Image (cartoon, rainbow, N blue to C red; front, side, top):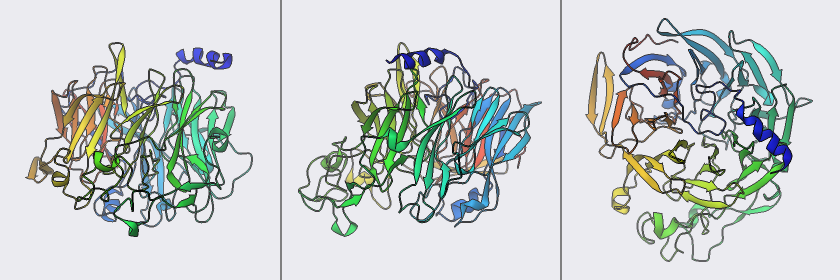
Length: 566
């Protein structure tokens, strides 16, 4: 460790961020756990509409809510959320307004104190992500940090939402569409980190970004930044040729035993959308990048506190679980072409690669042992992805078989730690997974794994009924014999190791260690729900989301349900 890094690491004992739930994954490491004990799930204490356009959004997508929402941020009696206003236009998301709203518990009611509109807009354009990009705040003890337009960020007054300071990392206005790409992260010293992409003005998904950066704002307001080109020296150059995938008419894949996929121009390395930087205890910053033209050329990058690269770890060619392993036998329904090489990704006839998908909210997680996790995408295993682990020196240590749209939580206990994640074994389209994979059928789990990525326990969704509130009663139809998806991208874990997670069956679950003791409370049915994170307040209240609504769940003793605030 170089002396400057050691000096910075020693300062990490000074907490500067708010302490209840201040950012994506709660802390700068994204561990998603808290020292609080979660309250009993006796009932809904408050409900608040975050997205009034949820029904319209679902009506244009066949019932799925393809929107990413921020984690509710909590500090004492204050709650900070993203709320949408404006108008909804299916072909232009810019007509919506992303607002910062402060709610506060006053006399047992969650009350709106102020709302601050921002000028931030999500990325758009043909060929871009179909999921709406996440807009996310972060808290320090004295302010709220709210992304704005053109790569800027505002420091807001917590008492009234006024702008205390506007930060622009660029000396002159940039051309094109400049976007704060992911949630900001605040370390224990109060340094704010976020990523920016300068997209091309025309055809932003076909043309290289004009620039991309990791930005840091120090507690004294000093701005520094590093280009992603400087942080990823091991990646292919923008003009280099990268192996791509076979075309649809060549199926079933791979076209032959020795088939080689075509080459495409790689495109510039730039940040993954929605991937918040993670900060390790020693001050190392972890970011994720991808080649703009192909998500199969992605990197986990460790960055020194002075914003110089520490190491680049490629996600290419890491998996050997494709044809005839996680897939049905080759030559059979759902399998690869007869004679395929065992273990390859049928899409390119190569060992599987961790893909950096812009529809995901996967963010790196800095582990207690110095390593880092990232939930990558893979399509060949029913779009379930892989959770990849890299050591503190960038060496690859293996992967768990699920990683799609996932920022796993970390629970430290007994001198070690466990990792908790959703694990959905999907059915895609009309595929009968029970027939083609009888040993791996449709099923939905909350899974806890060890530092070695082995299963410690699983809780399987066993609810089979779709339920709806009708007046004061709940009416149900038994129509999901294989259970429901876990509609969460980041579970929340309390100090006892109790895991809180949302399900598409409309319930919030509390799952105790071992996966045996489970309690739940019904919110509202959430078929096709957005994957949404939860948070836990210092008093143990659970802040969860469902269908564009914030729900606060906890023990009896306070009013069970308040009028919906709009």
